[in-house]
Length: 97
Image (cartoon, rainbow, N blue to C red; front, side, top):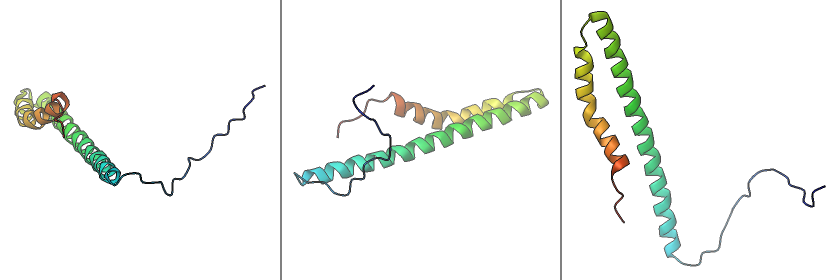
């Protein structure tokens, strides 16, 4: 038999907290704004990547029926710039605030 009885339930609701320093509010707001911005960037990244993949797949299908894959080259050259910006965001070192 275990000594403790573990109950899985809802998280604790935090209604208030004690503020030690006024600078904490600015730090918390920066964190919240940063998280919101990252969420928007993530959604835009997925949207761009899905659009590129869909365009490449449709151009490939057209190329299969057409016999020439010129469309794939055109789509790839148009998708290179947005894809480059996305990859740059992943491989750039973050700048200090």
